[in-house]
Image 1 (cartoon, rainbow, N blue to C red):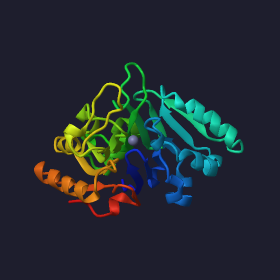
Image 2: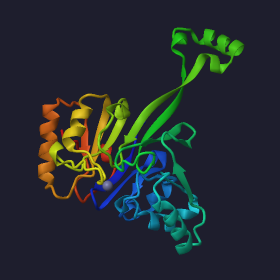
Image 3: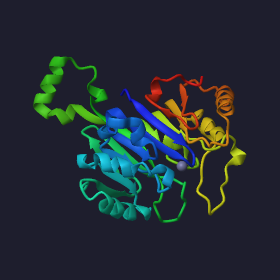
Length: 288
Ligand SMILES: [Zn+2]
């Protein structure tokens, strides 16, 4: 599936990714509506990864402008800030009553279109035992396909079989993981990201030894770890974002290039420059 992805993602300041064809937004940091303008109105489903302010402060203006289109805002079920946001929004913009707020558990699946499913996956950014406070999201496209055992049959044989046994006898629904959004998280289980077409992953730090895994701190990934993981799984396209503004862009790019070589990565690799919004990311130049 062709995806038109727009986004901004710089650690501490703002993160959001909008996917036009899906009408879906992942996170809603500052600058969302200012950059997307009228296109923000195409967003019908807003999936927030966690309650850090840089991932949700764009919601106020989005809701003010487009709440009348009755969007749904999804959030991790134990992230306590959202009930305050909801009641504030309802008081502040009382003319916008259409917005729905939905708390997600681990592995909750939301059907956003007839053939599109977004699945919430608990991650380890805010690692509190027994509480869901931060989520990654996986997007699946469902296709109704002919079962493998019937592929050799002629059109006439298929029509006959369908008449006698019904459509569900010869066809089955297959799921393709067309996009995975990591949100903010350290890498803890690479199988979560395996076999997806487009992986959007955070890379707050460049090097492994810069990642701070102290118990009381929210946890992130390094570029080094992301590239190592990508070399071990099947991903068709990689979008890197959430770089810390402590790095110079030329330093980030040369580190991406070094790691592409080191891990012999053959897929296209895109990156969101620090402090920049990128429109239609998959149609911009790759780093490699
Ligand atoms: Zn963040």
